[in-house]
Image (cartoon, rainbow, N blue to C red):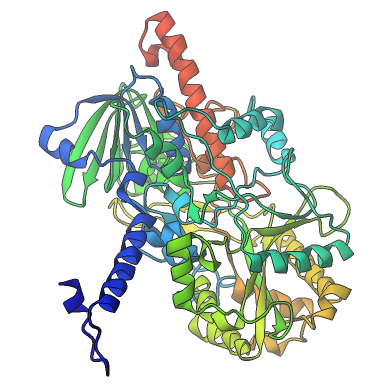
Length: 626
């Protein structure tokens, strides 16, 4: 039958042997494709059982199976006496999610929430719809299933500042222990446990451009860094990434799926939580209501705690819909107020501006001998090649003033080869098509080297509000990027650093030059003047996808604080938040590693608090009210 399906209109037909060989090849490729995101890689879905048998009470309900939520569920279910339920709005990750080089394609797919800021006239004007785009993961693994996979712990000052602000036991010495715990191999085949899997996953091509970047940045005084032992430092480095053998390793895989065989752990996919119900004057959460597969509304009771880990956008959105938030905002929407807290305030994010260098296509790298078909074959059969590599893990941390060892700018570097312009177009598909076309013209005779200039410690702060009382509506995001003049000044100094990089011997030897992208508005200013670069940022500046802060952690004296240093929601005795929304401000690094660390800490807080409670033989809410 297979042979018959391969009878192509060739000049000379196969006698059968060639057809059999080709059939074997096709079957091998299809099998390898299915294995990219195979069912055993992910936790089993308890949804059908929930529909037929209903749901009883659970000790812990974890909302969100993202970077932190998967860790929390994995750790809590280590106690066989605790019954744990995970509610995830998405499904298993797609095949594209698992392939490192295709990360950006997933960010504009059904496996991401499409969020946009309210209009900002001074930034994101070069993006589609002229709006800042904020994709958030909607799959097992959460945003860890669609991100760039960099694992960066942040600068020690980030956490020491949290400690100084009144967040007890959140200094660098405290969190460092949890970073170490997160990556420590634990468990065995009979008693599996989760831990973060890290690997420097770079192709030969990435290593080749790496040598150029190391040499060029060294001319400007940046040392080459090895393994970071105490947070980030000034210098250039290959960052560790959450990947192995050409596959993404989100916590949804290495924590939640690894332990999904535990009988006390249930995961329901495509379960969109729409409300938390409270009793005892709004001080105790009792029921969580969710919509399964867009059709079945279901409710489940909680015995001990609800752990919110839906992320910086969806966790505050859920709380606001449930009546926890600013009284004035909730009353305007006629939502009964359960707790008056600054939910949705303090929205923080990094800001990115991408700048390009042109490299003549006869320099640096030889033309690739691999066609796209060869690349996918190499990946499917051998888990190697250009598709297996991380797009932009080569990074520099710099201080643009030169007056401190604390970075204020981070660069990610990436090489786009002239013969692989499709990969570039996929990575920037959120941009306006005219800008993509203007940049792509350069592939006729050049490679492009991109520099993602990241504002490490933005001072501008935004907020999040509900659009309506419909749980399906996206919230309103007021990002307020670059509202503080200091942020723009730092970005400009970062661009000046790249101009200095252009003048290094290393870059001049390659004939590398900054790419001028035609733009009527920006070209009305003198090229490379401050006014020109401000205009450039207006068009190619955007958010960094590192949202934090909408449920700020802080002491009770902080009017903007929503959770205490043990991550318990103020005024509510059994709701804990375990995701990036609790960060008081944006750390000087990518935020996935800190989110995982927060998940580890939340799990330990819960274990400690409930161990105490058991000893005293009293309900949790009495324990916390004393």
